[in-house]
Amino acid sequence: MPMARIAIVGIGRVGLATGVALATKGHDVVGYDCDAARVKDIKSGIQPYYERGLTEAFKRVTKSGKLSIVGEPEKALDGAKYIFICVGTPPTTDGSMDPSYLRNASRLIGKAIGGRKDFPVIVVKSTVVPGSTEDIVIPAIEEASGLPPTAFGLCVNPEFLREGTMMEDSLKPDRIVIGSRDRRSGDLLQKAYSGFKCRKWRCDLRTAEMVKHATNAFLATKITYANEIANVCGALGLNSDKVLEGMALDPRIGPRFLVPGVGFGGSCLPKDMRAVVSASKQRGYEPRLLASVLEFNSRQAVLAVDMLQKEVGELGRKRIAVLGLAFKPDTDDVRESRAIPIIEELIRRGAEVVVHDPAASLSQFGLNLPVKVARTAKEALRDADGCIIQTQWSEYGKLGGSDFAGMRKALVIDGRRTLKSGKMPKGVIYRRIG
Ligand code: UGA
Image (cartoon, rainbow, N blue to C red; front, top):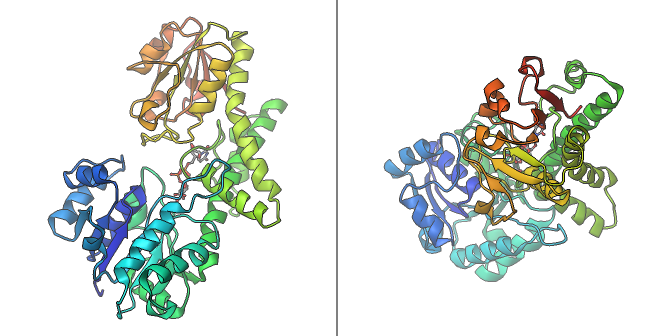
């Protein structure tokens, strides 16, 4: 496989996992970030992100000299054949995409490639609303570089990495989507990916941008559908797990992303959905299904609190334990975690909230909710009038009789199908959504 010099602009989770994967396949990769503290940490071996296998893989490729991390853009960009844009695309207050990081990165790249005659290929990996590459990236690069559009290549190459398993997903993707402005750019990027054995699927720039959004929106909708069916089953007195299991036997449906609970969180699904809903509305089409998925999701978390209140009565001055702050297990990320609306609702109804998470904290992401923090799940449960399991951490799946024995009222609202209902110790009231 021909090896190339690759620059990564933005070494957040996605940029780092991508850089490590490309370096593992033999490319010479230099990652750049404007955040000096992040660069310093990563260089000194402190991983800012909890990702399975990342630390070991990172060590391997830095030791072999295939990957380096720098704080000076020219060190990464000068002479790079491929330049991956992996910067964040955070939301603005109205939910639309904030394009400023994307624009700044494009300008930086434009400045660096000015005068080059070797057709460097710029690859947009950040999740962007359709049209962003043509409307923001290309003009910014052209302006800053002074180059005509024919002098550089342009691709959109969305990532489908799941937090927690980003290393596995980057090294063994099940598909690689390559959107390109022209055939030459796409062929070059496909060549860079020749060490990855999976289907490479080609399309144009806007299609690739939309494939990413459509995929995430489908996953969010599938989860929401499972939640709706579970709620209906609950109302009808049916076992939703059995119903969903039976439904998933249809190969057109399948069991993945069909696990009901308190709703989807994380830094991607909710943000991407809002961005695409907002972009579509601005262009005159109101995507009602997608908008209602978002609305449904915000209500689903509150259902857990309603369920709890039904058993406990008024929540004023009741002590409620919330187990799990992370938006899913095996990560310390609390961004858009369903723990936040659950805690806020409990507080609004007057409860005293005590939280526990084996890895995540709210303050880490600047969230300061008036809650007590327990060191262990057992400590959180002590004297509680009920608890809500919000994250499916494996340690919560092992909770047993002695853990619940210290509760004032042994009531468990399982928001994530964490405990086996048939195995609950005597005296524990166990409820779950659906
Ligand atoms: C998601 C997508 O799954 C990735 O494919 C995508 O690349 C990524 O966003 C992104 O856009 O970068 P991630 O945010 O890591 O990945 O999280 P998921 O594993 O999708 O879980 C999202 C939320 O849905 C979690 O809160 C999880 O608990 C919930 N969920 C998931 C359910 O409630 N039920 C399910 O069946 C599955």
